[in-house]
Amino acid sequence: MIRTIIVAILILFYLVISIPLMFIFWLLEEFTPKAKWWYQVIGMQAMKTLLFASGVKLTVKGRDKIPTDTAVLFVGNHQSYFDVIIGYALMKRQTGFVAKKSLKKIPVLSWNMAYMNCLFIDRENMRQGVKTIMQAAELAKNGTSIFIFPEGTRNKSGDETNLAPFHDGSFKVSQRGKVPIVPVTFNNSESIFEKHIPKIISSKVVVEFGDPVNWDDMDKATQKHVGEHFRGIILETLLKNQELTA
Image (tube, rainbow, N blue to C red; front, side, top):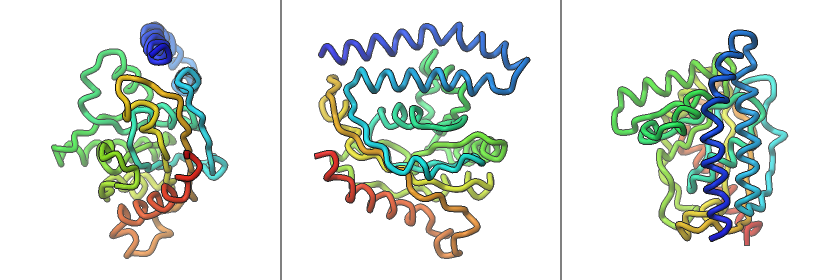
């Protein structure tokens, strides 16, 4: 439990100091457009510290495939809260995550997320969901990468290969924002916390970034079933990397 307590203290410390930091960087926006990116860099270092404190043994594959000259739509499987922490720690440019609407009710955390261009989606309200996806597409068009979990919720089945269907609407960010899609596969991230709540346990985690795919380079059949297509890519990668977490 000592590791769990240390991580909880670090999270609380980060949230407390983030309040004055957000104000400082908000003022800096008047002088430089890079202020939000600098704030995210601080957040990324905080995420790396959390991973170290959690004892996560991280193997990263394919990070060199992430385009550096354009924003990207990252699409990944989702089995742990740590997916977001790991994802943020590995980003190369300003990136906003699409998160569930309920997180918007958490003070300080939601302020941090909103300042870093995260968007809150209501999966039960189709009209609002579409509006959020269009906002994400606009951010992507203007240079902010978007990270989304097309399953719409965490996989709680206990079997990481039991992926829910990927919502096709999530991929509209690529189509409307004119940015490539990069599949991201998380292996064994649920072993850090979700498999034995409330304890945090040192775990081997593998993250693999796949080849970027432009919307216009896909044929019509693939575009029509784009969620199924990328679900297949991620499932194949999950199966391939399972031996690395044994």
